[in-house]
Length: 509
Image (cartoon, rainbow, N blue to C red; front, side):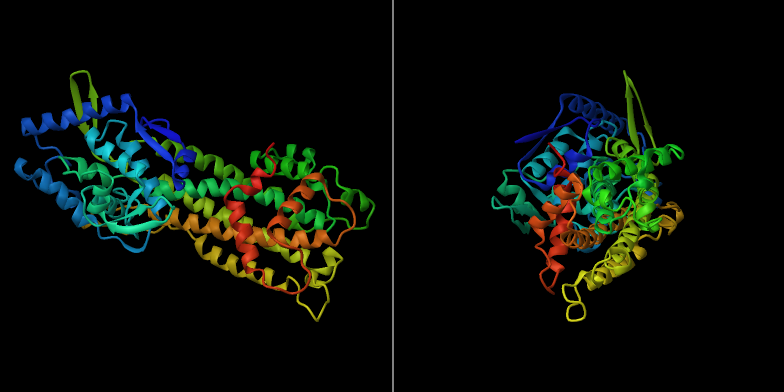
């Protein structure tokens, strides 16, 4: 049993992602309880003073000039959730909803949101009992927070709508949210002033998808460097382009990391030694320039992780309550705006496309007799059999999908709320797009691995220790080519192993 302590400041991407698996327990820290109580006390003080403060006793968005009577504030919060819960489209995976809930809890736990400890504790108990409200994915503009999706999350908290509950066997069962809470011994809450806004006015959906995407990207770029090494061996290519001196002459950090990894993967290669004096002068760009193409993604991932780690430990609702000794300020701002998240989603989506593009080119080279010096498409019987011909076709088709997804969503702006919210980031769309992009990239890399592994089966010389290790690992998932057959399941299984970290784990220990 693993426990995650929520304090508003130390949540990690790995902890968020761990919610995909049952057996994780969330607990609220003492410091978070103290900070939350301070900000909630401010809300009560404002209500007692009858001071007019946005988000506490006013309408929302373009209706912020409308003052709400104290007797109607609970109804105001309930109405906010119900009116904003109008998202559409496919339903979010329950695991992603749990991640979104955890991120929202951590943000509120910082103590700037004016929400009760009891509210956060209820959400934590829902997570611990694997209760995930049903949330349609589409509806957030990536500004004013992920309003529509988070409102569906909040519906479950107040006992409305439907919820997914995970059984002891691991299956998700859809049921009435109120019944799901009751089965776990929990009661729906009645939202107090400011609490509805605190729940929905944040970047939590964006962060959930970006968490998964960045962790995927880290595995994918490592796998791409491994795949380069396997492909170089499969065409008897050169290690020279990864010479440390080349990359010191152009000291881009990501490029240097990629080159060092590929070079290490190619050490002690019998294949490399066998063609030291061959007449091939240079390999094609997809091999020779791999580090220069992979490097920018390594740099982008590092910066994206930095930005996201800050975001998941930030207060992203509005207004925020700042308490100092006996005084306080309630300040309206724009921390709900997801521009930084939208920008990194665009950047990584382009990088994923480029890694897929260069991988598809290497796949093509492996299947080409001019480079591999083997039968066309690595067929056992040329002409009678087509070998791996269509794997390259499929990679090209997946790349076309990725090309569409590489287009920027950040440059799309549609003003809303009668023009008061006149610039939005579309970060939720971008974050989910990137998540899909990582899935596609894993398929292209899987096809490259399959092709290089078949080519290596036909080479008598011994590959490097690392490539031999990976070749054996692939053979545990994909059997050798002994004649034409369908590879669809092989590609998908191998892609899944890339994304679940199995390939990375091969080198551990």
